[in-house]
Amino acid sequence: MDKFKITGGQRLEGRISISGAKNSALPCMAAALLTPENVTLHNLPYVRDIITMRRLLEDLGCTALMPELRTLNINASSVEIFEAPYELVKTMRASVLALGPLLARFGEARVSLPGGCAIGQRPIDLHLTGFEKLGAVVSIESGDVVARAKRLQGAEIDFNVVTVTGTENLMMAAALADGETILNNAAREPEIVDLAELLNKMGARIEGAGRSCIRIQGVKQLGGAEHTIIPDRIEAGTFIAAAAITGGALEIVNCNPQHIHSTIGKFRDAGVKIEQPNAFSLIVKAADHTKPADVTTLVHPGFPTDMQAQYMALMTIAEGTSVITETIFENRFMHAAELLRMGAKIKLNGRQAVVEGTEKLMGARLQASDLRASASLVLAGLAAQGETIIDRVYHIDRGYEKIEEKLRAVGAQIERFRD
Ligand code: EPZ
Image (cartoon, rainbow, N blue to C red; front, side, top):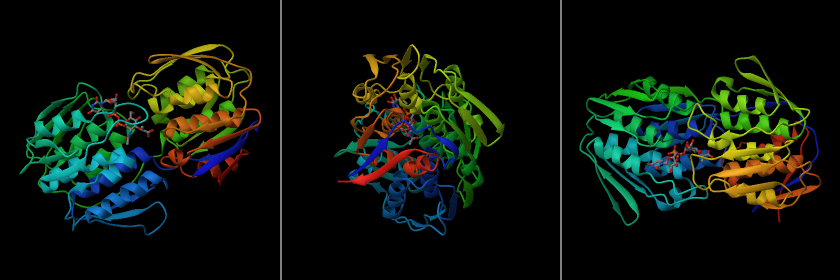
């Protein structure tokens, strides 16, 4: 298994470029199942989850060709299998995004029901009740979700919890339903807007993506389209944290600052200087003295849960105490125990972490537990005195494109090795 070795204490300086958003690319790839025509996606990040989703599409019978790096031509004209097996779903929960498109286009889908994961139980009950509202018959058979419908019928669906992939799954299914579907209390993340843009290019009639009420007029069929995936807002936020925690200065390019208002605002509260010279870049300079600033994770446009771990890493070296409240997932503080091993002072109390800043973190041997937790350990390692070894970096490879190469290019001492 790959590991990272980080020698901390280097100030990061230079320019770093943001890759395409994994969490936008995954639903957009699944959307290609809705049409027999070609869907071409550009700016895909070169990360493990994208490779897994490509494999899922190919297993279903799609062709997925890569004419150049970061571009994929997907053709789902000869799909004959409507099933995402346990082996894939257990490695990537986003496989459930195949449910909506398969059900809508072929009237049948079987996807292994994902279990809990490192950050929480993560049920998909809202996806399933949504499909039922659209007229599907849904059952659980031998651990799989089986959904069937001759043709989906538009309906009004009220989500009692805001769900990102739930909104995406229902939006894709409703695009091919008969009549109008209204999604109330829908997620408003930029990834929802990106998916809706792709679907509309394919001929869907979706209005309101990015707001909490989305209206979808179903169409008989969808066609091919070409689309460029938005930049990864969480990767951008992670590099803001990298500049901040190393006392460094980074120019972050090919990002979309509009997507990360709340992240930028929170790092500014901590004293980080962030300028936005144009619509696609940021200039970040660390604070002379990092200030403690409380944060609560919220659905978009609030502070993202996917930035909570990285922000906590910064707060471990702030000059004072901060309170971090996680409201989205019930078990997303796995990184705290590892940060403690580096000398951080963190007390957990249910969904709250009280972080008392310390002058210096110390290098240690650490275990990555999930994608964003791993990112926070890398950040802490960059700031720590001495050497940090991070085990199980496959977690980070799921969603960060060549993070060690990007960090090395701006002055970090980080190496990948295997023993
Ligand atoms: C998406 O997960 C992202 N994944 C996550 O990114 C992200 O952390 C999360 O949204 C929140 O922003 C992808 O886009 C592929 P949810 P998702 O459904 O859609 C509850 C990363 O590191 N819920 O919005 O699975 C759920 O338990 C990852 O890149 C139900 O109760 O998250 C949670 O408490 C990790 N029933 C809350 O809603 C449901 O049917 C939000 O989850 C669905 C969700």
